[in-house]
Image (tube, rainbow, N blue to C red; front, side):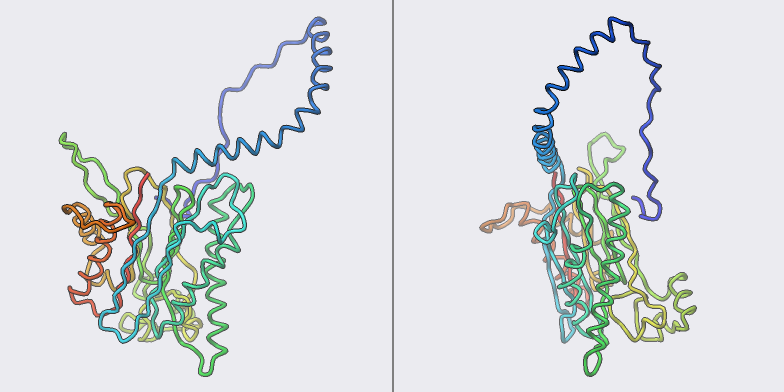
Length: 362
Protein backbone atom coordinates (compact mmCIF):
# COMPACT_ATOMS: atom_id res chain seq x y z
CA UNK A 1 0.00 0.00 0.00
CA UNK A 2 1.37 3.38 -0.99
CA UNK A 3 1.00 6.62 0.85
CA UNK A 4 0.22 9.39 -1.59
CA UNK A 5 3.42 11.19 -0.66
CA UNK A 6 5.44 8.18 -1.75
CA UNK A 7 3.79 7.48 -5.09
CA UNK A 8 6.40 6.75 -7.76
CA UNK A 9 6.67 9.16 -10.62
CA UNK A 10 5.23 7.91 -13.94
CA UNK A 11 7.91 6.12 -15.96
CA UNK A 12 8.25 6.11 -19.72
CA UNK A 13 7.82 2.79 -21.49
CA UNK A 14 11.15 1.24 -22.39
CA UNK A 15 11.93 -1.03 -25.32
CA UNK A 16 14.54 -1.83 -27.96
CA UNK A 17 15.64 1.01 -30.22
CA UNK A 18 14.82 0.31 -33.87
CA UNK A 19 17.57 0.35 -36.48
CA UNK A 20 17.47 3.10 -39.12
CA UNK A 21 15.20 2.19 -42.06
CA UNK A 22 16.86 1.18 -45.36
CA UNK A 23 17.19 3.82 -48.07
CA UNK A 24 14.32 3.80 -50.58
CA UNK A 25 14.99 2.70 -54.19
CA UNK A 26 13.43 4.34 -57.31
CA UNK A 27 10.90 1.50 -57.56
CA UNK A 28 9.97 2.07 -53.92
CA UNK A 29 9.47 5.81 -54.56
CA UNK A 30 7.23 5.09 -57.56
CA UNK A 31 5.11 2.68 -55.56
CA UNK A 32 4.96 5.18 -52.73
CA UNK A 33 3.65 7.87 -55.11
CA UNK A 34 0.76 5.74 -56.34
CA UNK A 35 0.02 4.67 -52.77
CA UNK A 36 -0.08 8.31 -51.66
CA UNK A 37 -2.77 9.08 -54.26
CA UNK A 38 -4.94 6.23 -52.99
CA UNK A 39 -4.36 7.40 -49.42
CA UNK A 40 -5.55 10.93 -50.25
CA UNK A 41 -8.69 9.52 -51.83
CA UNK A 42 -9.45 7.44 -48.75
CA UNK A 43 -8.51 10.04 -46.16
CA UNK A 44 -11.68 12.14 -46.34
CA UNK A 45 -14.06 9.24 -45.70
CA UNK A 46 -11.70 7.85 -43.06
CA UNK A 47 -11.73 11.11 -41.10
CA UNK A 48 -15.52 11.12 -41.18
CA UNK A 49 -15.65 7.75 -39.45
CA UNK A 50 -12.69 8.25 -37.11
CA UNK A 51 -14.52 10.01 -34.27
CA UNK A 52 -17.35 7.48 -34.33
CA UNK A 53 -14.92 4.54 -34.26
CA UNK A 54 -12.94 6.07 -31.38
CA UNK A 55 -16.15 6.64 -29.41
CA UNK A 56 -17.20 3.03 -29.98
CA UNK A 57 -13.78 1.75 -28.94
CA UNK A 58 -13.86 3.90 -25.80
CA UNK A 59 -17.35 2.63 -25.00
CA UNK A 60 -16.22 -0.97 -25.42
CA UNK A 61 -13.20 -0.33 -23.21
CA UNK A 62 -15.41 1.10 -20.46
CA UNK A 63 -17.73 -1.88 -20.78
CA UNK A 64 -14.84 -4.33 -20.41
CA UNK A 65 -13.31 -2.36 -17.55
CA UNK A 66 -16.59 -2.19 -15.66
CA UNK A 67 -16.98 -5.96 -15.79
CA UNK A 68 -13.48 -6.52 -14.41
CA UNK A 69 -13.71 -4.07 -11.52
CA UNK A 70 -14.87 -4.88 -7.99
CA UNK A 71 -18.42 -4.25 -6.85
CA UNK A 72 -18.76 -2.67 -3.41
CA UNK A 73 -21.96 -2.86 -1.39
CA UNK A 74 -22.39 -0.88 1.80
CA UNK A 75 -24.08 -1.91 5.05
CA UNK A 76 -24.44 0.37 8.07
CA UNK A 77 -25.31 -0.01 11.75
CA UNK A 78 -25.61 2.89 14.20
CA UNK A 79 -26.09 2.77 17.99
CA UNK A 80 -26.61 5.77 20.27
CA UNK A 81 -25.07 3.98 23.25
CA UNK A 82 -25.48 5.87 26.50
CA UNK A 83 -25.23 9.31 24.90
CA UNK A 84 -28.25 11.62 24.98
CA UNK A 85 -27.80 12.47 21.30
CA UNK A 86 -26.62 10.62 18.20
CA UNK A 87 -23.73 12.77 16.98
CA UNK A 88 -22.43 10.41 14.28
CA UNK A 89 -23.38 10.73 10.62
CA UNK A 90 -22.64 8.56 7.59
CA UNK A 91 -22.96 8.43 3.80
CA UNK A 92 -23.25 5.40 1.49
CA UNK A 93 -22.94 6.10 -2.24
CA UNK A 94 -22.10 2.89 -4.16
CA UNK A 95 -22.48 4.86 -7.40
CA UNK A 96 -21.50 8.53 -7.23
CA UNK A 97 -21.94 9.13 -10.97
CA UNK A 98 -25.16 11.11 -10.51
CA UNK A 99 -23.22 13.77 -8.55
CA UNK A 100 -20.43 14.12 -11.12
CA UNK A 101 -20.72 16.26 -14.24
CA UNK A 102 -18.49 13.80 -16.10
CA UNK A 103 -15.88 11.13 -15.44
CA UNK A 104 -12.29 10.95 -16.68
CA UNK A 105 -12.33 9.06 -19.98
CA UNK A 106 -10.86 5.81 -18.68
CA UNK A 107 -12.89 5.69 -15.42
CA UNK A 108 -16.02 3.51 -15.26
CA UNK A 109 -17.33 3.99 -11.74
CA UNK A 110 -16.80 6.12 -8.64
CA UNK A 111 -18.11 5.14 -5.19
CA UNK A 112 -18.04 7.10 -1.94
CA UNK A 113 -18.54 6.03 1.68
CA UNK A 114 -17.93 8.07 4.82
CA UNK A 115 -18.39 8.14 8.57
CA UNK A 116 -18.35 11.33 10.66
CA UNK A 117 -18.08 11.35 14.46
CA UNK A 118 -19.32 14.61 15.92
CA UNK A 119 -18.38 16.18 19.25
CA UNK A 120 -19.80 19.23 20.99
CA UNK A 121 -23.01 18.59 19.05
CA UNK A 122 -24.18 16.94 15.85
CA UNK A 123 -24.10 19.96 13.54
CA UNK A 124 -20.54 19.56 12.20
CA UNK A 125 -20.95 15.84 11.45
CA UNK A 126 -24.31 16.39 9.74
CA UNK A 127 -22.95 19.33 7.75
CA UNK A 128 -19.99 17.23 6.57
CA UNK A 129 -22.26 14.32 5.65
CA UNK A 130 -24.52 16.62 3.64
CA UNK A 131 -21.85 18.70 1.92
CA UNK A 132 -18.45 17.03 1.65
CA UNK A 133 -19.37 14.75 -1.27
CA UNK A 134 -20.92 17.69 -3.16
CA UNK A 135 -17.67 19.64 -2.80
CA UNK A 136 -15.81 16.50 -3.91
CA UNK A 137 -18.03 16.20 -7.00
CA UNK A 138 -17.38 19.83 -7.97
CA UNK A 139 -13.62 19.41 -7.71
CA UNK A 140 -13.35 15.88 -9.13
CA UNK A 141 -11.13 15.68 -12.24
CA UNK A 142 -12.93 15.11 -15.54
CA UNK A 143 -12.03 14.62 -19.20
CA UNK A 144 -8.94 12.76 -20.40
CA UNK A 145 -6.57 13.22 -17.46
CA UNK A 146 -3.05 12.00 -16.89
CA UNK A 147 -1.59 11.70 -13.38
CA UNK A 148 -5.05 10.95 -11.98
CA UNK A 149 -3.57 10.04 -8.58
CA UNK A 150 -2.12 13.51 -8.11
CA UNK A 151 -5.35 15.16 -9.26
CA UNK A 152 -7.42 13.09 -6.83
CA UNK A 153 -5.00 13.95 -4.03
CA UNK A 154 -5.46 17.67 -4.74
CA UNK A 155 -9.22 17.17 -5.07
CA UNK A 156 -9.48 15.52 -1.63
CA UNK A 157 -7.28 18.12 0.08
CA UNK A 158 -9.28 20.98 -1.47
CA UNK A 159 -12.57 19.27 -0.61
CA UNK A 160 -11.75 18.93 3.09
CA UNK A 161 -10.46 22.50 3.28
CA UNK A 162 -13.58 23.85 1.54
CA UNK A 163 -15.97 21.85 3.74
CA UNK A 164 -14.22 23.03 6.89
CA UNK A 165 -14.21 26.66 5.76
CA UNK A 166 -17.90 26.51 4.81
CA UNK A 167 -18.89 25.04 8.16
CA UNK A 168 -16.77 27.51 10.16
CA UNK A 169 -18.33 30.40 8.25
CA UNK A 170 -21.81 29.13 9.04
CA UNK A 171 -20.91 28.34 12.66
CA UNK A 172 -19.46 31.80 13.33
CA UNK A 173 -22.57 33.52 11.94
CA UNK A 174 -24.82 31.91 14.57
CA UNK A 175 -25.84 33.55 17.85
CA UNK A 176 -24.23 32.09 19.90
CA UNK A 177 -21.57 30.67 17.59
CA UNK A 178 -21.58 26.90 17.09
CA UNK A 179 -18.66 25.08 18.67
CA UNK A 180 -19.28 21.66 17.09
CA UNK A 181 -16.55 19.60 15.48
CA UNK A 182 -16.31 16.27 13.69
CA UNK A 183 -13.88 13.61 12.62
CA UNK A 184 -14.11 12.33 9.04
CA UNK A 185 -13.06 9.10 7.38
CA UNK A 186 -13.95 8.92 3.69
CA UNK A 187 -13.40 6.06 1.26
CA UNK A 188 -13.39 7.01 -2.43
CA UNK A 189 -13.28 4.07 -4.84
CA UNK A 190 -12.31 4.84 -8.45
CA UNK A 191 -12.72 1.60 -10.42
CA UNK A 192 -10.41 -0.73 -8.46
CA UNK A 193 -8.38 1.92 -6.63
CA UNK A 194 -9.31 2.91 -3.07
CA UNK A 195 -8.44 6.38 -1.78
CA UNK A 196 -8.92 7.04 1.94
CA UNK A 197 -8.92 10.52 3.47
CA UNK A 198 -9.27 10.86 7.21
CA UNK A 199 -9.19 13.35 10.07
CA UNK A 200 -9.30 12.47 13.74
CA UNK A 201 -9.75 9.05 15.31
CA UNK A 202 -12.36 7.32 13.15
CA UNK A 203 -10.71 4.52 11.20
CA UNK A 204 -10.82 2.40 8.04
CA UNK A 205 -9.33 -1.09 7.73
CA UNK A 206 -9.18 -3.63 4.91
CA UNK A 207 -9.58 -7.40 5.32
CA UNK A 208 -7.35 -9.24 2.82
CA UNK A 209 -7.22 -13.04 2.63
CA UNK A 210 -3.80 -14.62 2.06
CA UNK A 211 -2.81 -18.23 1.44
CA UNK A 212 -0.90 -19.95 4.21
CA UNK A 213 2.29 -22.00 3.78
CA UNK A 214 0.45 -25.22 4.63
CA UNK A 215 -0.66 -27.49 1.81
CA UNK A 216 -4.28 -27.67 3.02
CA UNK A 217 -5.27 -24.59 1.02
CA UNK A 218 -6.35 -22.63 4.11
CA UNK A 219 -6.32 -18.85 3.89
CA UNK A 220 -5.78 -16.43 6.76
CA UNK A 221 -7.04 -12.88 7.15
CA UNK A 222 -4.68 -9.92 7.21
CA UNK A 223 -5.89 -6.60 8.62
CA UNK A 224 -4.49 -3.57 6.77
CA UNK A 225 -4.84 -0.06 8.19
CA UNK A 226 -6.20 2.39 5.60
CA UNK A 227 -6.18 5.44 7.87
CA UNK A 228 -4.05 7.16 10.49
CA UNK A 229 -5.35 8.41 13.82
CA UNK A 230 -4.81 12.04 14.81
CA UNK A 231 -4.64 12.82 18.50
CA UNK A 232 -2.56 15.33 20.45
CA UNK A 233 -0.35 12.66 22.05
CA UNK A 234 1.30 11.85 18.70
CA UNK A 235 4.64 13.67 18.54
CA UNK A 236 4.15 15.44 15.19
CA UNK A 237 0.64 16.53 16.14
CA UNK A 238 1.72 17.83 19.54
CA UNK A 239 4.64 19.77 18.05
CA UNK A 240 2.33 21.48 15.54
CA UNK A 241 -0.11 22.43 18.31
CA UNK A 242 2.65 23.81 20.53
CA UNK A 243 4.21 25.79 17.66
CA UNK A 244 0.80 27.40 17.10
CA UNK A 245 0.68 28.47 20.75
CA UNK A 246 -1.59 25.68 21.98
CA UNK A 247 -0.96 23.21 24.79
CA UNK A 248 -1.59 19.51 25.31
CA UNK A 249 -2.79 18.52 28.77
CA UNK A 250 -3.94 15.06 29.78
CA UNK A 251 -3.77 13.98 26.13
CA UNK A 252 -6.13 16.74 24.93
CA UNK A 253 -5.75 20.07 23.14
CA UNK A 254 -5.99 22.71 25.90
CA UNK A 255 -7.03 19.83 28.12
CA UNK A 256 -10.38 19.54 26.29
CA UNK A 257 -10.28 18.31 22.65
CA UNK A 258 -9.33 14.65 22.09
CA UNK A 259 -8.42 14.96 18.39
CA UNK A 260 -5.79 17.13 16.71
CA UNK A 261 -7.47 17.35 13.28
CA UNK A 262 -11.15 17.92 12.58
CA UNK A 263 -13.86 19.68 10.64
CA UNK A 264 -15.23 22.57 12.69
CA UNK A 265 -13.87 23.27 16.19
CA UNK A 266 -13.35 26.93 15.29
CA UNK A 267 -12.15 27.82 18.78
CA UNK A 268 -9.23 25.37 18.40
CA UNK A 269 -8.13 26.19 14.87
CA UNK A 270 -5.85 28.96 16.15
CA UNK A 271 -4.22 26.38 18.46
CA UNK A 272 -2.91 24.16 15.67
CA UNK A 273 -5.96 21.94 15.05
CA UNK A 274 -6.18 21.56 11.27
CA UNK A 275 -8.53 20.11 8.64
CA UNK A 276 -5.84 18.61 6.39
CA UNK A 277 -6.54 14.88 6.01
CA UNK A 278 -4.06 12.05 5.76
CA UNK A 279 -4.37 10.38 2.35
CA UNK A 280 -3.73 6.74 1.53
CA UNK A 281 -4.49 4.52 -1.43
CA UNK A 282 -4.47 0.84 -2.26
CA UNK A 283 -5.55 -1.23 -5.24
CA UNK A 284 -8.25 -3.81 -4.58
CA UNK A 285 -7.56 -7.43 -5.51
CA UNK A 286 -9.64 -10.61 -5.68
CA UNK A 287 -8.18 -11.51 -2.26
CA UNK A 288 -9.90 -8.55 -0.58
CA UNK A 289 -12.99 -9.46 1.44
CA UNK A 290 -14.30 -6.22 2.94
CA UNK A 291 -13.50 -2.71 4.19
CA UNK A 292 -14.59 -1.64 7.66
CA UNK A 293 -15.17 2.04 8.52
CA UNK A 294 -16.11 2.99 12.05
CA UNK A 295 -15.94 5.78 14.59
CA UNK A 296 -13.79 5.44 17.70
CA UNK A 297 -16.77 4.09 19.65
CA UNK A 298 -16.10 0.70 18.05
CA UNK A 299 -12.33 0.80 18.53
CA UNK A 300 -12.61 1.66 22.22
CA UNK A 301 -13.70 -1.94 22.79
CA UNK A 302 -12.33 -3.73 19.70
CA UNK A 303 -8.87 -3.77 18.20
CA UNK A 304 -8.91 -3.53 14.39
CA UNK A 305 -7.88 -7.17 14.07
CA UNK A 306 -10.52 -8.31 16.58
CA UNK A 307 -13.22 -6.44 14.64
CA UNK A 308 -12.15 -8.05 11.36
CA UNK A 309 -12.12 -11.54 12.87
CA UNK A 310 -15.54 -10.94 14.47
CA UNK A 311 -17.00 -10.02 11.07
CA UNK A 312 -15.40 -13.07 9.43
CA UNK A 313 -16.86 -15.33 12.10
CA UNK A 314 -20.38 -14.03 11.45
CA UNK A 315 -19.90 -14.34 7.68
CA UNK A 316 -19.01 -18.02 8.13
CA UNK A 317 -22.01 -18.85 10.30
CA UNK A 318 -24.76 -21.28 9.21
CA UNK A 319 -27.75 -20.52 7.01
CA UNK A 320 -29.40 -17.11 7.35
CA UNK A 321 -33.08 -16.31 7.55
CA UNK A 322 -34.11 -15.20 4.06
CA UNK A 323 -35.17 -11.59 3.52
CA UNK A 324 -36.85 -10.35 0.36
CA UNK A 325 -34.55 -8.45 -1.99
CA UNK A 326 -31.29 -9.61 -0.37
CA UNK A 327 -29.04 -12.47 -1.41
CA UNK A 328 -27.63 -14.82 1.23
CA UNK A 329 -24.24 -13.10 1.02
CA UNK A 330 -25.84 -9.69 1.50
CA UNK A 331 -27.77 -11.02 4.49
CA UNK A 332 -24.51 -12.25 6.02
CA UNK A 333 -22.82 -8.86 5.64
CA UNK A 334 -25.89 -7.06 6.97
CA UNK A 335 -25.96 -9.38 9.99
CA UNK A 336 -22.20 -9.01 10.59
CA UNK A 337 -22.48 -5.21 10.52
CA UNK A 338 -25.42 -5.13 12.96
CA UNK A 339 -23.91 -7.70 15.32
CA UNK A 340 -20.56 -5.89 15.44
CA UNK A 341 -22.19 -2.59 16.45
CA UNK A 342 -24.37 -4.31 19.06
CA UNK A 343 -21.40 -6.20 20.47
CA UNK A 344 -19.50 -2.90 20.92
CA UNK A 345 -22.35 -1.61 23.09
CA UNK A 346 -22.57 -4.94 24.96
CA UNK A 347 -18.85 -4.70 25.75
CA UNK A 348 -19.50 -1.44 27.56
CA UNK A 349 -18.92 1.30 24.97
CA UNK A 350 -20.99 4.25 26.18
CA UNK A 351 -20.16 6.35 23.09
CA UNK A 352 -22.08 6.50 19.82
CA UNK A 353 -21.12 3.58 17.58
CA UNK A 354 -21.38 3.73 13.78
CA UNK A 355 -20.09 0.88 11.62
CA UNK A 356 -19.98 0.78 7.82
CA UNK A 357 -19.13 -2.58 6.25
CA UNK A 358 -18.26 -2.66 2.55
CA UNK A 359 -18.38 -6.05 0.89
CA UNK A 360 -16.00 -6.51 -2.06
CA UNK A 361 -16.77 -8.89 -4.92
CA UNK A 362 -15.23 -9.29 -8.38
